Length: 393
Image 1 (cartoon, one colour):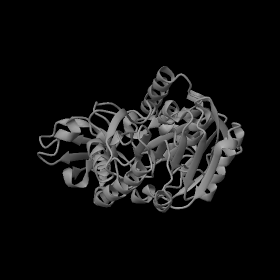
Image 2: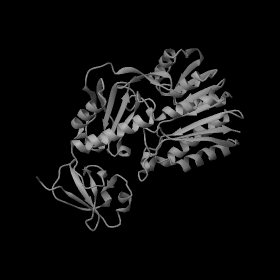
Image 3: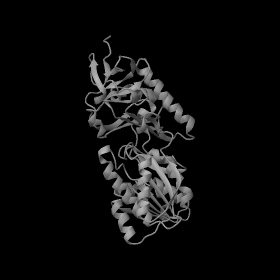
Image 4: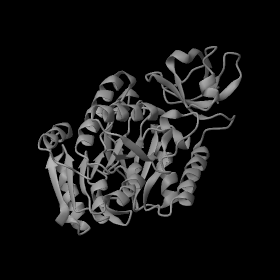
């Protein structure tokens, strides 16, 4: 058997990896000894040659090594079986209902680059790095044995794969089935399209935050901006909101909002507005509209550090306009799924918007993603979702 290639880290570049961060960047590598092919398993050592762990290598990526383990152990099918089993057992223990949940959350479950979502008896897989893509046949076999789904679908139609030198594609991996299905969430029925919906078909990470809107929504007039398929809208309606307006730029998303409302017998108090949420917020403010609750759940404004300055302006604008339309005693539910928009910065942006809007805020709840999207100490990127609930005074 050929000897495994060794990645030697530069001196002074080991602390972050030693503390558990799973990414080795190109600039942290001093030299590589031995032969390897992209996607192979390599050993990582510090500047003195001391063993630090193993991971898969891809010289085409700025993240040249994604760490799998800090132990001297073999990386084989059995290794992945143990990791996937632990991930599934964690969900079964902490979630009362695993009908719809994230089964594997990449680096946060110590399987870098792998996303697995469960929608009823269908699994959806994303392989976001070359290293895990090479193990995909074994991963599918393990998941088939572990969870016994009716079918498995791959959503590898994401641009990030191209940064790893991988092609985009999607399709069936196990079984043939209707990609549109209905899942239960918070006692509601939600239509999910695993073939064409965003990401893997539905944003499972906001499940608990969507339910959290209920105490604030009874008898309220609610504006749900960036509504997607209506998760927040449905929870507001079922809690007794007197009116909900869902806003999204996608006609397909709003069609799904209406379909989901009809499925749950909640259509009578729902209306939709198609368009850019920035424009619609501006129009509603100009018209002096008032809402007891406004939900802001935009897509990631800061996809990288370079876009953070523009993201700050975007978050400030939508929160400013929202606060101007909420009467005293109303509530603002504002979210950011941008990792680079750290919690303290996000709160500072909202506070700045409140100052300009001449409003005071009381922070009622500070929330994150659900437990099936775990946050791991040493890997700050795993804490990406912020959900702040404020009373507007």
